[in-house]
Image 1 (tube, rainbow, N blue to C red):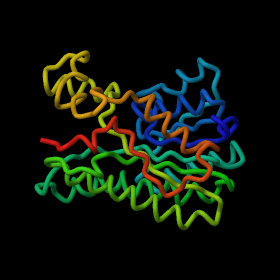
Image 2: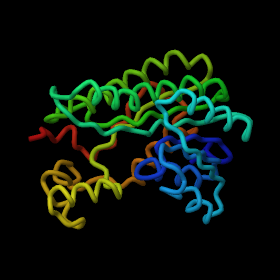
Image 3: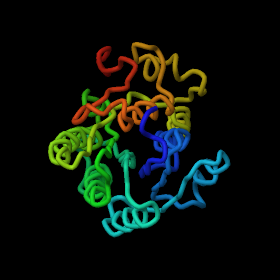
Image 4: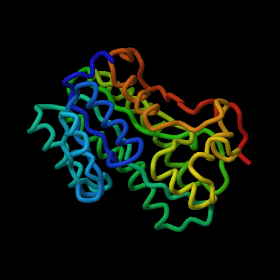
Length: 259
């Protein structure tokens, strides 16, 4: 895609899943990618994996809910690469509870999904070049009501509102801000979780009415498909798009409802 080559990107929560796919895609496009994750390199050696393909990748252990970590991450990126072009806020806490959620449940999910995103933007924009772009990862959980999803869905809705407000505030700096809201995505962790909880084998997930069957396209998304949406919103091909929530859900939100 146009406008991604040689650009400096920070992708949070990029050790696995969608974040890893985004990091791979941006590196594949010729960008310089900083992978930031709460897990250390010894846990998920994504950077070494990407380096085998001779892409420019660095790995930083960082907790996005910790302002000291975030500040150091952005300062380090700026000192190494001379600025930041793109930020992908993908780190997430998946606390999914209803009204029974306790204070610690709320703090955990808000600290990562709301405060973490805000802190990353706050410190990244100090070094972002005009023409830069930010993508916040939301979810269809922000758009449809699901049983016992109050905590997670609330934060994902907040992420969309945050991006819209940021789009207004940062337009004068030449920085675009958008969100991506995926449907069910078959990351490695999601597959393991679904199989463990339901007894399904991985090849049966797409045909099951609770997963692939929720989507008009009769299958779940691949992480690479979400990465393509993120890459598009960062690229020059989306140069006139800001404040938008791109729903990448295979028709899930219009098929509904959740049972």
